[in-house]
Length: 117
Length: 112
Image 1 (tube, rainbow over the protein chains, first blue to last red):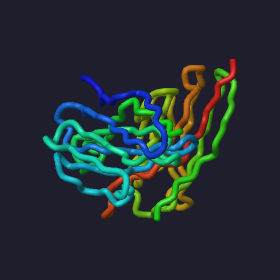
Image 2: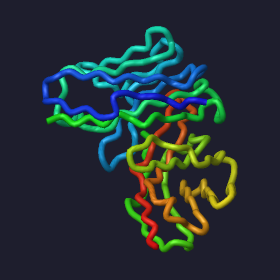
Image 3: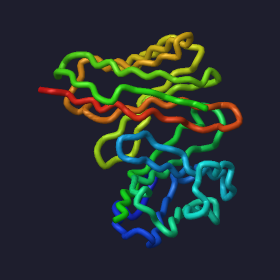
């Protein structure tokens, strides 16, 4: 079974530029998550999709961050414009659904390391 | 809100046991997880425990839960160099938030 795929793996941009990250979840997984992991910290949830609908984006800085999952499969996360404090690893995860423990097991991709100069 | 705390670093000798500790605050947590993160990789689920359990053993891993003190620990028996990684404790909020809250991670270094 293929895992969660993310691209690019690394990205370096200057502040005020835009950047986009792509995620392909495990086939059949209804729920998709984007996390931000700042160096030395645990992952922090940014947004959660159930199929192609947003179920939780309360921690997403909506003035600069946006995300979509148009066909309920792949997802993109965009930052526009980027700030220095956005430097982090952006992790995508997927699970079968939001429910019980087994179905909620989240499988993580390798992440995209973003450096904002 | 939820808060999960871990000590930042742990060093052990190869062959010894490692014990990684975690405290959490959300009394409504129903599941608690341990994830492992190796350099440049995503998080890998190691094990989990239901909140109504005290202990769970899975090969070299033993999870202990003290629900009264909201304390969780992960014991790795016969620690190997391949166990060197960052270990994250996480709690699942089964309430309205329905999300995982992670600790800051414990960097485990296994010395030869």
